[in-house]
Length: 285
Image (cartoon, rainbow, N blue to C red):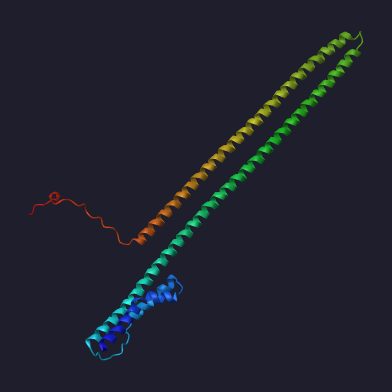
C-alpha cells in the first residue's frame, strides 16, 4: 500500500509536469518579443548551469528511489520541452521580423522608383510647356514682322500711287505748246518710275529673301533643339536603365545573402551510382 500510494503521487506529479501546455492554455500570457525570449533562454541556461541544493533524505525502498529518479527525469524533460518551445517561438519571431524588414525595404524601393518616375514626368511636362510658350512667342514675332513688312509695302505703294496721280494731273494741265517738252519730261519721269518700280521689286525680293533666311534659321534652330532634346532623353533613358540594373543587382545580392544565411550547411554532391561491373579496378603495384 505504501509503495502504490507513492507511485500514484509520482504519476500525478509527472503528468502535471509532462503537460505544461494545459497550464499555459489556462493562463494564456501575451506573446513576448524576440528580445525577451532571448533573455529568458539565457537566464534558464544560467539557472541550469548553477548547482541547486537538494535536501538529502534517506531512501526507504527501491520503489521510492525509482519514483525519485522518475520525478527528476520529468522535471528535466519539462524544462527541455519549455526551452525547445521558446527556441522555436524565437526562431519564428526572427523570421517574421526579417520578413517585415524585407517588405519595408521593398516598399521603400518602390516609393523611390515612383518618385523618380513622377519627377521625370513633371520635368517632361515643364519642358513641353516651355516649348509651347517658345513656339507661341516665335509665331507672334513672325506675325509682327509680316505685318510690319506689309505696312511698309502698302506705304510705299501709296506713295507711288500718289506720285502717279500727281504726274497724271500735271500731264493733263500741260498746254499744247509745251507738249513736246512735257512728253520728254514725261518719258524721263516714266523711266524714273520704271527704275523705281524695278528698285521696289528688288527691295521686295530682298525682303522676301530675308524672310526666307529668317524662316530657315528658325527651322534650323527648332531642329537643333529637337535633336538636343532627343539626345538628352536618350541619356536619361540610359541613366534610368543603369540605375535599374544596379537596383536589380543589389536586390539579387540581398536575396542570395538571405539564402546563404538560412542554409548554413552546404550541399555535398554525391558521385553518380554505377553498377559493380562498371567500376574501375586499378591494378595493384
